[in-house]
Length: 361
Ligand code: SAH
Image (tube, rainbow, N blue to C red):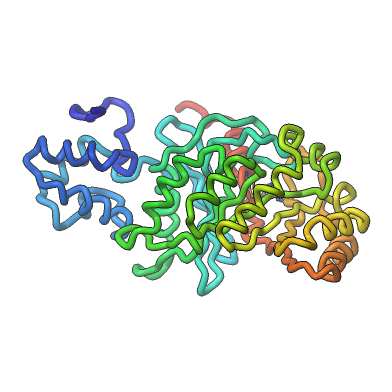
């Protein structure tokens, strides 16, 4: 068994990354009962403790021993930005010095956490900041959970909870499905963050086999598929991985998800001025989605430094919305939150990584 028995020289392993059986054995080695595992995890997940010192119902000596072997939270806050609309963005440094972003969006009574699943992204969507340098690695279940814990700890009231999770940060969630599901399983626990599957949206570029797997789980997650174009020719220009999958397979998998779960699928559509925002494309999209009980979420392009894309004109956007609505589709335009803090994912990390290193003193 992979037991950390001697204090590490590098960063200490994060507690949330330890399998419960590893922790049980660690406590047993110290003559401590198995219930300590639940107790410590509950402090972090529900009790807002970010150090062992705060865990007042543990013997003092045990708290010290825990602190020598584990990090209560393994990520470090590299930047914490707050926008005027009370959107918070965290840039977190992981134990291997990689960085990820996560965001808290507060629109009472909703408190939504937007989380990442990978360092970088391998999907290469041409307009997206997260994938510009490819994918580095998957996040562990603990790293996914820690984003939620840290964002929840930012909510104002001490009993404040997150109400929703959107897995729309950096990375392709379905390319890291096992770790994501492990984290979300904990999220739903009453001793954890108490957020059930119905309040969790998983957004994917469209990996058909993984969509089907998600459907077969029998969970009530909400699925959002990033469509961005109504035909393969245009979609492959915008979402290069489309070349390998194709729209038909993605839509068939999404239909299967709806059949199995009864949950309506959302189709996300980034509006890129002059590229996929013209009336003909809108009509084609309407025809494609009309016979489905689909919801469309339009996202006007968020500027990414160095990329040549632009937002649609207000007229083009209005015509696009109107065309979809007249076809009977349910349409929403995603509100822009925290724009002055680069809340669109992947942008802050790029900026900080490109900053010159601080001069040595
Ligand atoms: N890999 C997942 C999650 C990506 S982020 C997916 O593809 O769905 C969530 C949504 O934001 C996706 O629809 C993504 O295409 C969109 N997005 C990424 N960069 C954007 C930008 N600069 N402007 C607008 N939307 C963007």
